[in-house]
Image 1: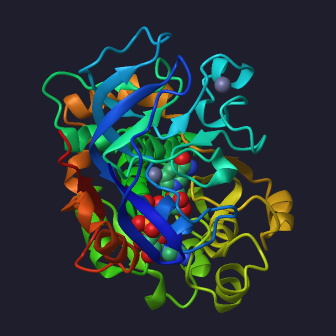
Image 2: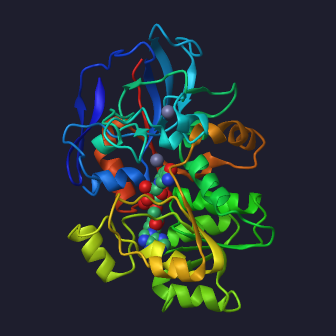
Image 3: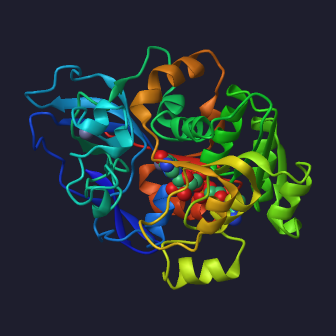
Length: 382
Ligand SMILES: NC(=O)c1ccc[n+]([C@@H]2O[C@H](COP(=O)([O-])OP(=O)(O)OC[C@H]3O[C@@H](n4cnc5c(N)ncnc54)[C@H](O)[C@@H]3O)[C@@H](O)[C@H]2O)c1
Ligand SMILES: [Zn+2]
Ligand SMILES: [Zn+2]
């Protein structure tokens, strides 16, 4: 089968790999129909995630058709059209029972902090990903969800990560009616977080980035205010000034470890890897939220040692909430929102490319070329 193959930082190509096989009675084999590239894949692509092995296939946002099921799979049948959450979770451990599907204690034998994720390095379990014609899906009765009749596959694939992550970012912000919410990052996740902030009652939504076409997009898509941080002398001061010197009620970090905007963070976190990524957006979030406010983090960071102003967190009495999105918990509500037109995720898809063009797709998304918001790879395997 054809599959993406990681060869080292900024080098991916399409290759032939052996077909995946059922390795456990709870596995299914899925023929992929759509597979996205995510901002999280860029952390892998740029070599910023430990234990990202040459030869691995990335891809944790995909839809497909069930081709084969193990003897202990009961909820799926061959031929089902499914969307597959990016989390791999057992459904039975103490954390899955609390619907913390991003924190499964069983699916990732390599670590206790993060659960399993498709195609996300050996730190997230070493599972092969969905940027391929076929993929093995473990715990097939837990994650995969049959796509409702009539739902566009482009909407369905966005429900595997971007929609739930943006929604959970807003949810974790504990937004109260009338709150001012600042979202750092106008990538797909930040765009969705800004849109969802209104659903929780925000009174004002501000998005900060430095890529004008993305700011323009989110301004229209999420009906919010937008600012390019390169044109602000100091984003923190700006946010304070525009909130009567109090600070924002809620700040959302939808940027993560590869933030731009501060040379020292960029050099120590992205170039020299002396800390687990550049924490520029997170610093801005902590410093511009009001005292007693909430910082919601969905941007991904390495596990240890970031230059984060933790003293300010204590002195300002800030609540920090963060997680990988618990996709399965949110799916019933979000499927309804998509069906009712409250969220239109496929509008974020700017590029539809054949899987064979994966290396171009990564370059376009990574370098923010051609006004790219979200690229989707289409496979043609039958
Ligand atoms: N927690 C989860 O479950 C989860 C799920 C999906 C993605 N993520 C993470 O969310 C983040 C965003 O994902 P995406 O797909 O939108 O990525 P993306 O790379 O498309 O978007 C990130 C955006 O942040 C902007 N940015 C860079 N520095 C900034 C700064 N200092 N302030 C404001 N904006 C800045 C970039 O210009 C870019 O537009 C990534 O870190 C990704 O790994 C987390
Ligand atoms: Zn993703
Ligand atoms: Zn579990």
